[in-house]
Length: 116
Image (cartoon, rainbow, N blue to C red; front, side, top):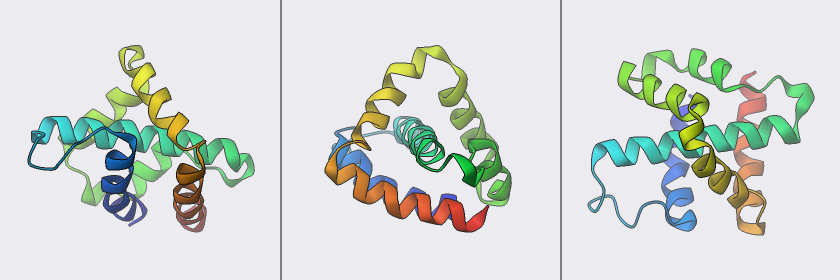
């Protein structure tokens, strides 16, 4: 449920962060990639802000396994582990250090903590 709510909020993140101009402008693969990058960055930022909460990408994905397609799971894991995507994850992570990003992150972290 947490990832489902976060996916809904990712539209805002991607627009504000400049990742996706419009849903029609990007293909499904590009949208899934951008969602994965943002999800990895959000999870890292929440885990860093709340080190005692036990927040991890793996835990979130396990809880949401029923709502994630195998392809989306693969894309998220690739975004989290492949160094090729590190600069994209950092760029997304950096958004969450801005005033606008911190407000959004606070809400997302609250949901992650509530489900742990």
